[in-house]
Image 1: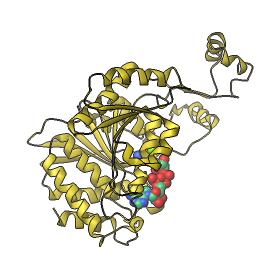
Image 2 (image 1 turned 135 degrees about the vertical axis):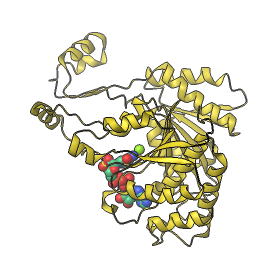
Image 3 (image 1 turned 90 degrees about the horizontal axis):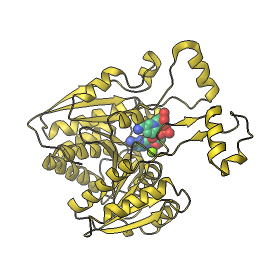
Length: 378
Ligand code: NAI
Ligand code: MG
């Protein structure tokens, strides 16, 4: 699961995307070249440019490419600005039939990349660390929950009818016009919950982690989060060597800030996982350090958590460390743990030395200078 068989050579999809995504991948290539991974990096088109020109931010040729690679590195994309449902409808009615859906969310669902793994580690010497010695790992369910994409605005009359019939609390809304409210479905399956929770426990066991904390809001969101928590209790029975812990999502945001050392591995449904992983990333330096892996059984896509930062696009100013650490995660997943360690050690050394820093860390080095400095230390 979370790790593949080591091979003699690899095929890696290289998906820069938009804006600074292009720059941080260029920097990452400098570092990857230095560890001499025997890999063919194959460019793939993704993002805003392709939505504008082809009406598809994840063209079929990129999907086909992803079917034939061992792993992928993804930079960032610019999303389509949020429009009202009416505007969306106008586009549809114009006959193009194009509805924008995030290519990242699509990739995750299409290839069942059900684990979003986000390690958050404070590297010594990083002036942006909230506290020293933070070493948290967040497992976020990546395909279900409120991100299932089952949403209605306006709400179809059939749905209003069904909800009026089967839901008591809903009767208060049923007199509204169908465009006066919206419905987004939070869908969680037993199977999906089990897979992510197992992945978290397996990771904990393999990496000698002591505790897994289940993040939920089961006291209020009883059906879906209740299911997630029940599944977690079941799965935990197979891991008596690891402490089972649970916390409400609202409370844990406070506790994480108060005492991050109380936590070790965290696992959460999609939306809560998205939120707490950003909080954890900020504790170890923010967007320039947030790396993540979207991991399935066969394919895994690694990326920095930041977006395309249009205001810095083309300036080679942003921090490539998040992406370089994402490449380190990719090497771990490919079973290339020694090469992964080389990258992590060199990155940690550059952070500690503090001579070469991008603007976010108070320096003025360029994106590529950081990468070159890291490569020098390998
Ligand atoms: P963003 O993450 O692109 O950037 C926000 C700000 O964070 C930047 O202006 C910059 O000050 C800082 N920042 C980001 N990455 C940095 C780095 N590597 N080093 C130093 N500072 C960094 O978020 P924003 O501006 O809200 O979104 C821009 C576009 O990216 C939008 O279209 C958004 O939808 C999209 N997006 C894409 C994501 C992805 O591709 N995974 C994730 C988040 C946003
Ligand atoms: Mg996010």
